[in-house]
Image (cartoon, rainbow, N blue to C red; front, side):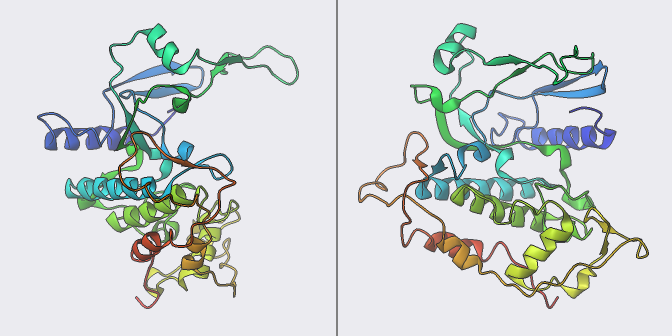
Length: 332
């Protein structure tokens, strides 16, 4: 994390201290802030470095529509876990502020007893590639010399992954007792934050619902081009109607971000199109469920391949649960 403002480090250390106080006996493995942290001063400035325990893959890497997806019953189990994690985090007085698939990880069996060769035996040798400039010029001191590829947890022939989730990414977290207006993040766009209203536990709940949809479908509820608050609100209106009048929707600048400068800003374009969330869920493609598939919990994640066909009733549990999570009341 390069050149992060002091508030980022303060957020992380504050959350770490609060969680450590609540779980002082053993520590709750569901909440991962850091084991220790340090700084490195280099050509690009000062870097905050966090040391985390060895964790498994994040849910973003496990839910890619064109490559592989987790099976519905496994997603349902993980969705229940994720909901409990957010509930218990809020009970500790913390709002996460960046709930998304990339911040939810599967835990892994303890491999601390293994040395380098043992890790290589499980997952293969590290894939290292040197950086080269298009012009052929030598890289400057500000650039890394090489890139190390991601570890492929599914490449191991052994069952090392646990069906247990952990939450990371506390750099935008804050105490619920002091809710604040946070900078809208492309990966964490919720309606009230997008229009510069204070984030709250409700923001985490909305993001959790969108995350569950992503886990389930392998794609985002919102199109790829929704990369700014203005476009995001436009898409929300298509699904849920106009945003609450009490939010007093702001003007938007050229980058589609909220601005208080009415002379330089513009109002959001009005769109007459409407979308159905239930229909979006019905259109999710699944692998047909086998009769014996739900008899036991899988020891390792099940995956759905792109060529599988839709199961007609697999949408039922998701549609019922999500409709109570992802919504707002336009009349408020």
